Image (cartoon, rainbow, N blue to C red; front, side):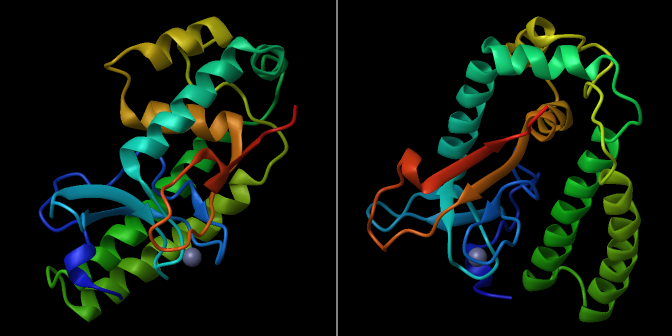
Length: 208
Ligand SMILES: [Zn+2]
């Protein structure tokens, strides 16, 4: 399971805006939060990384990039269209898409707990198999054609933008907005020592 010292031991919440949502361009695995000590000053910082150590991005930086892109999107004709189009969409899919992303993040957390020695292998296996079964059902549900607006209180791009800019918007609601607008957030592998830049991240917007 990799290096336990790089995992989120005792970090409280282990779910970030893009945990179980963004993925590694190399192996397609979804990324989750890890804590890494910087080489220069030995400071702790949070990164998103895949289990195979390919791609990573500083969590604060990536959350910020995605946040800014979402604001731009909500101000653009495509963002406005996304919400107006959703008005007459049928079946609820966003709920299922969000539940699936949360299940993937929980699976990562269980693996982390095992790596940190907080639970036994048997406990991990039990919890994981239950979650995988749930995930299978949820992902089928998530594959339906339409996405209605993610939240009852969001009925258009203006209210989405206002909600996004509010400091108190709950994490799960933010995750719902990300999933509603973005089909994929992909992190590309970098050569060691190369500073992360926007070219290392690909965002794919949903087509409406
Ligand atoms: Zn990977």
